Length: 142
Ligand SMILES: [Zn+2]
Image (cartoon, rainbow, N blue to C red; front, top):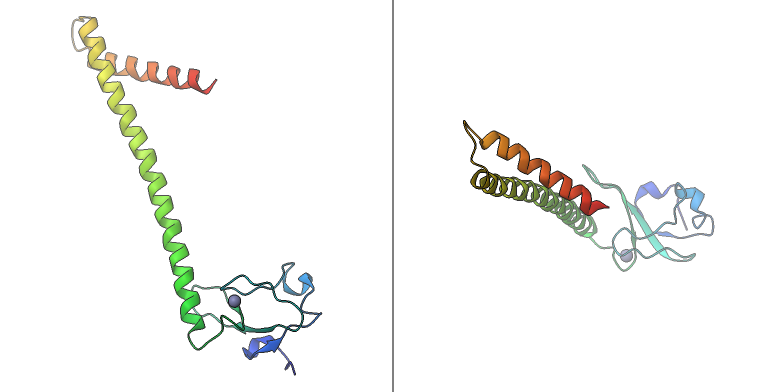
């Protein structure tokens, strides 16, 4: 029943040879949409995915005329979600930096109030505040 190669994209029956992970780069073959791991006797089909997508395998339940569209939409969503998560992480880091700078500025103002200094005390006070924050952060790590 199975023709020469799965790359013809026609429905196939999963065989005991197909079940050997070494056939597929040491992985068990599974449906790319629902994750069902194919068992001997299962319907399955390989589908070529053009562009920036990995080719897919589909089970009988997930297969259909729009399988490629559904698969691409799922891949796109995963990519978008992944980059949104990375953006949020970057924002968190930026917020932490800004909070640190704000804390330094507040502390610098305190230091200026506490110690009247000749000349321009702001660079000194900022440096002082930054050093204090860094040594506090180190103390917290311990
Ligand atoms: Zn499936």
